[in-house]
Image (cartoon, rainbow, N blue to C red; front, side):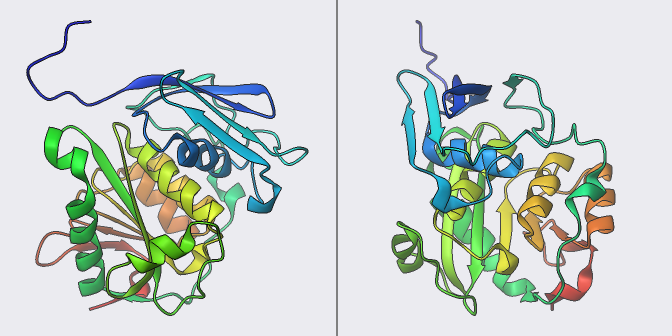
Length: 261
């Protein structure tokens, strides 16, 4: 295959299976596929307990990822098709977003901390900087939260920036894939999602908000802005959206009580 002399965003079809059953073909960047596999199942409501996972296997060369959690993978909440493209959402098929419930109140974070976390995310996003055609996402756990107990939690805690106890960054050609990767990693590390923020490089679409609500994450932050549907769903669920985080006065779209100036 002829390679371009110009930057390319890596994208491949990866078959995801759970307990030997094919779930979907994900058009994604074939990095951190174990995180993507778990995160995709978790945000579709198909996997609820990290202790139920027996094994996670992934091979970028073979373009496969598999999760074995005997008796613990339930019916797909979103009713998606078998192919999930990198450029479209993976949760917007949910007919009634209110079925996910609301995000509990109580968590607050200041805007300067969010700005610092966003800068840290971009500083760690190597492919984003090299190609200009990738997306990145980060999950930050507030420093006041309980220490995660997962197998890799200590490594992420040791590299966490100021104001956070745990900080993980992942990249992908698809925005929703990058979010699945950070949530999959944090799910396996047993992070308390009620005191976390999602940070992302791109536009906030409805599927990303559905993923956040499903995990009960209270704050989603972006350098860009949300779509109208994302805003409507977040408002109804009590989730806070912060847009244009890189500007001097970011936009706080809904549930502003969680953001301290």
